[in-house]
Image 1 (cartoon, helix red, strand yellow):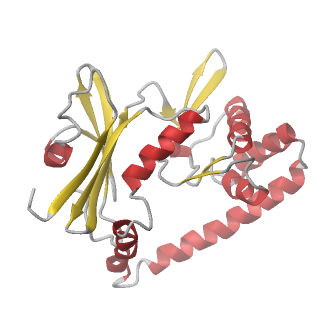
Image 2 (cartoon, one colour):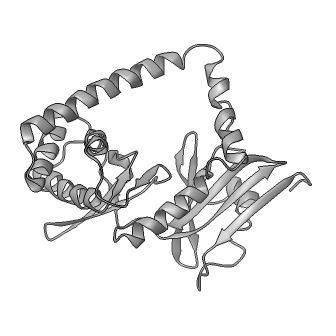
Length: 263
């Protein structure tokens, strides 16, 4: 570690996790563990004292966000994920148990950051595929509970929703939670509409999901489906436009895509 590099390290007191495991991650990450996700951010899984530990390394933020994080105007993603995990559990819902985080700085600028948590091998992601109606209805009921308790996962997508089934009963857990919103009361309708358009890949499953959600809340199912699908179409148009924009030379440099997480 150079003289200009500093680290903010926070670890939850843990009887089985070695004291040096989290502090040493920036030095050992690139040459240890099993890679399970390798994109802009990287996730590795470690076997530690007979248990599995998940470590997510967040890439160096794009330049604008990097300044905002560095000046304290926004909370760095690893720390935000840790704080969100604790709040989710506090409100009675599941997410892999958080163990700690590291924030690296190069001078005053935020560099890489790391979030450390339980590896929930007993759960599996929803994934982009056709799902049976019981699972769709169970997720609708779970989503109602989230919204009534004031929780909104901004990236409420299939791969960020983990589930397990036993004897026809489903349990759910949330991951990739750095973008999360908490309300003191129930989630506002506008945020509900945006949230409902994401958990499934195709419109037909979204309609079944929204219909069950409306039934459980005593809402008009037809109107809810129309509003959700309208927002979904707008969002898809925006995503296509954004993908086209990223093909313009120089845009990726501004967005920070040239900053690899693999160093």
